Structures are given as C-alpha cells and as structure tokens.
Image (tube, rainbow, N blue to C red; front, side, top):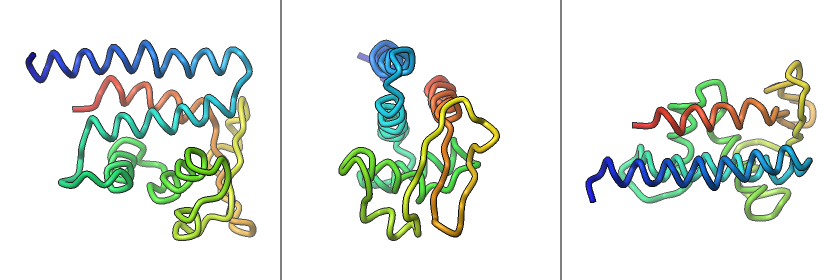
Length: 141
C-alpha cells in the first residue's frame, strides 16, 4: 500500500469515526464529550502530521497547534488536553503552562479565546476547536 493510500484510509477513518462521533455528541447534547473528542482529534492529527523529529506526544501536539491553530497558545491547549484526557480536570501540564483552569462555552463566540488573568482560565468555544480541527484534517501535509 502506498503512503497516499494509507493517508486516504486514515482520513476516511477520521472523518467517519472521529468527526462523526463529535457531531453525534454535539447533536445529542454531550458537549463535554465533544470537547474531549475534539482535543483527541488534534492529538490524532498531530500524530499523523509528525512535525517533530521525535515521538514525544506533547512535542508533536504543541508543534501541530503552533502550525495549524496559530491563534492559540500551544502549551495552554496541550495542558487543557492533558487535563481533559487524563484526569477530567487539572493536570501537571496546566501548572507549567501557568493555567489554573479552563471553561468551555457553546454558542457564545463573543467570549471565545478570552483569558482571565486574575484566575488564569482560558475560555474556549467548541465551534472554533471543532471547525479548525476538521479543516486541518483536510489540509495536513
């Protein structure tokens, strides 16, 4: 199987299963599940893109965010991913990213990417994370 054939199979699986499940979560009202799945989608895409010369998940994730989610702080986004995936709350990565917490909103784009320095909380809008993840899935090289 050629590299291009493998890439096309991976994209089909991502669109069918991962993005399909995110859409099901959103339509079913399981928004926290959709957020976690969206952060995992970035993880999958960063593993496929392999933008670093090592296998460190955090390095690849942060480099992917730096390249494809330019308006996000890659350390903070990775720290939130670690909190969601590993503890469903706080993580050690959040401390090193100087982040005390995070909050998610849906259908409130006016607050998107606001950062409350008093309490170190990043506000993230689900539509932005999902749409950028889906767009980047089509455009990774």
